[in-house]
Amino acid sequence: MCDTCGCSETDDSQNHHNHHHPKKLINLNVSILSENNRLAAINRKSFEEHNILSLNLVSSPGSGKTTILEKTIEALIPSRKIFVIEGDQQTLLDADRIEKAGAPAIQINTGSGCHLDAKMVGNAMQKLNTESGSILFIENVGNLVCPAMFDLGEFKRVVVISVTEGEDKPLKYPYMFKSSHLCLINKSDLLPYVDFDVEKAISYARSINPGLEFIVLSAKSGEGMQLWFDWLLRQG
Ligand SMILES: Nc1nc2c(ncn2[C@@H]2O[C@H](COP(=O)(O)OP(=O)(O)OP(=O)(O)O)[C@@H](O)[C@H]2O)c(=O)[nH]1
Ligand SMILES: [Mg+2]
Image (spheres, rainbow, N blue to C red):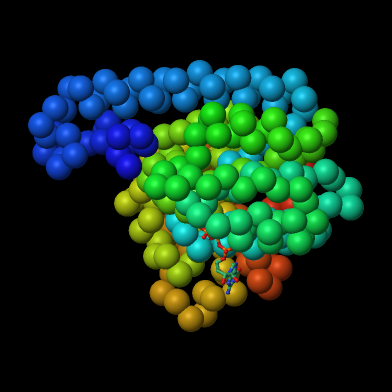
């Protein structure tokens, strides 16, 4: 897994994956990432040319990405075209949920892979008949580590954390929070039952990325969802 995602690139030579041939592996990972950056630039240009608002949703597994998308589609589809690319290691479950909610979706299964890359997104775009002025959500594989390093060409990156995960996640997984523009703090309906300090989570994340925006919401109760819709509409 580490050979393809580049996650040994930033680690030290004690890492069990690379201590025999550290230089060789680092070079391989750099070239994988630079090829990904090249393809991401092509995606970005194509999104801009076709006037598509592209957003990369990242989070640990189960923080509520698909539920947020279902509710977003139900609320916005009357006025806005929405398309979704779904990334998971296996199954068509999330794409089926999105289609039921009313938006065309393509599922990418990464198999043993732990992230989407720009090439997968470019290929999926060939099959989605997106229209000018539409929103493209790319739901990444649930993983707070590897997807941070792979630019997909998206306009903005949205990191979702839920209140059941603990407020220390921005400190433990800084790359993801550093590379994101907006942080959705989901499952606010569960705040009375868990020890999650929202202010602390926000200040930890701001210490990593001072420019990060935050919205506290609940896809289940609907609290805060309007703020998220307003943020989306402000993006264009
Ligand atoms: N209480 C509560 N549960 C939620 C909320 N949002 C999502 N869930 C639940 O959390 C679980 C995971 O939600 P998903 O939307 O599948 O999460 P995901 O991030 O798409 O998961 P992966 O794609 O597997 O990474 C489901 O049981 C949802 O019903 C919320 O706001 N409040
Ligand atoms: Mg999902």
